[in-house]
Amino acid sequence: MVLPILLLIVGFVALILGANWLVDGATSVGIRAKLSPLIIGLTIVAFGTSLPELIINVFSCIKGSSGLAIGNIVGSNIMNILLILGVASVIYPIDVSRISIRRDIPVGFVATAALFVFANYTWGKLTINWIEGALLLVMAVAYLLITMKKNESPSAEVEAIQIPMPWGKTILFLVLGILGLYLGGELVSNNAQTIAKAWGMSEAMIGLTVVAIATSLPELITSIVAATKKNSGIAIGNVLGSNILNIFLVLGISGLITPLQFDTKMNTTLYFLFGANALMLLFVFTGKGRKLSRFEGLLMLLAFAGFMSYTILAK
Image 1 (cartoon, rainbow, N blue to C red):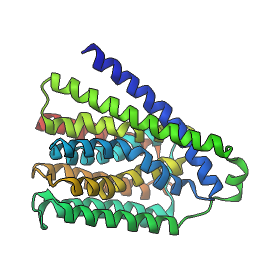
Image 2: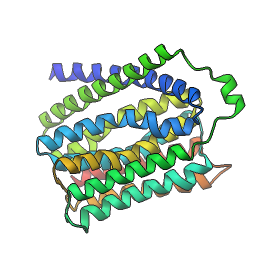
Image 3: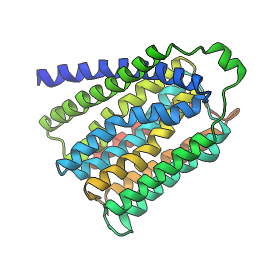
Image 4: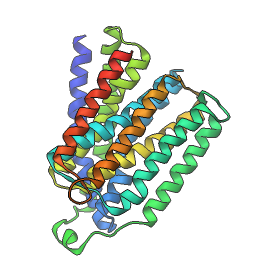
């Protein structure tokens, strides 16, 4: 067990470094392209931090562990909202833009509803087959096109304060950031599974807890880094974009590879995901302004602790 623990630590270091490089590189690209921080988080950063989920799901599908694939995504999305936004808003209150309230948060509900309907009621009942996978990918493309079309340009003040890095350094940071997140996610998730199995945990439990936590680490580290830099646009854009891409893109590709088996017990966890989205939306409209305050972040962390307690006791 010594080697898996050491590799786990190496994975954490790779994730932290990769997140820092990716945020800096993505911000530089966004400034040059006159993209708002929200759009940077929803697209470039969200895709980069969704790579661990994508890679693990592809490997799981090839190995025939499709149940692990769905559990990974659902558990990861819940953690993205309750844990990651909770931690980020405790560090620095997160301002939520009007376009996120009108577009990204509702699309998060739609993505969760699509997963619920496809898994329970459509062609591949209790599975997500290639038809549903293709439909999810179509939704992913449509969402990304709409997102880029509705870009909000950063203000002159932001442009004056933020100066982009040279192109060579920008590309280097992006490449190193994505590689760091990918390698770190691989090391952490693989060795976390090894340790969990050694402790006698079931595959379903591994998917909803250990793997979900491991694959959510890039989002967690990236959002923490963005929050410490007071860049709330990237912090919330990263989480919202990652959650949407996890369902539309990651599960879409996974469904094309092999039918994803769905355990009806997972419906309870999907209800938790609906609840997490609703709680986030509620907090946005309470308090002063459209933001997630430190107090609301603490409440989200308590909700996450409740979800983890339920998951552990239920299994």
